[in-house]
Amino acid sequence: MLSSNYHTHTKRCGHAVGEDEDYVLEAISYGYKNLGFSDHAMLPGFSEPGIRGDYSEFDGYVRSIRSLAEKYRNRITIYCGFEAESFPEFFPYYQELLNNGVLDYLILGNHCAMGPNHSIQTRFSHVTTPQQLYLYKDLAVQAMATKMFSVFAHPDYFMAGKETFDLDCRKVSKAIIEAAIAYDVPLEVNVGGIRDGKHRIGSGLRWIYPTDAFFDLVGKYQAKCIIGMDAHAPNQLSNDSAIFEAVKFAKRHNLVLVDSLPKIIQH
Image (cartoon, rainbow, N blue to C red; front, side, top):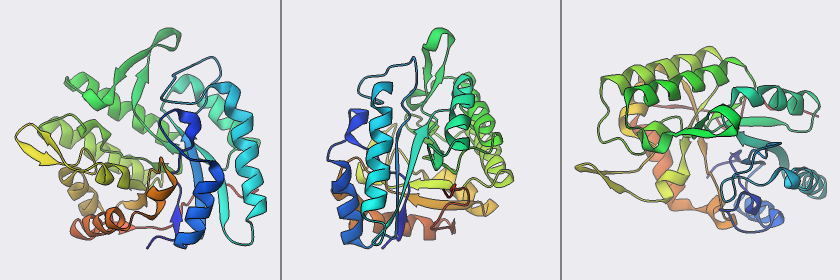
């Protein structure tokens, strides 16, 4: 059983279900002490229907989470955050939200790269060239270097569509792990990938993440890790079988697990 989860979405993103309070009640019922909401970042002047909520929903998101934090403050500690991309042009916006106490923390979710005029340049779930792979690494390291991010969600996301963990993958992984250690950013063992089951990728059958090759290196480096539920429905917070697999995976790779984040802003 976990005592904390900081990776929780809401229906605002367009691919999650359930009311905010349903997540809280499920977390309390399961025995969580801490619950962090980290819906996909709602960004001014940028829209991605079905991937992230419209910016017009941002105020309502924060009000809802803060209200629930007060309502249930004697039963569970609730935090309000974002899962945010490494979009450098939005770094000042992220920093302002943290500095002003609007958000408590950020999770780094490095799903894609932004090009000119808010265009999506590359989606890292389908890395096909070394250039895309190294772009993933560069953006991830750049984000961690800002020291705004409390955890790196599914850091091996670049492996989602790759058939083999080649030399470039190894170099990229080492750079990411070294940056995570330097900037004290725990790497997430993502339960969402485990819940989704194993997929045929190339000649092998595996989870899209977490991946053995990446976390074998993480274990050797003894970088901090945290289990994240990546919940998109309330009952996913209490998925015992997926949690069991995540814990077993962590033990197999000799991972250093933490149960709370080092950079949660207390307001």
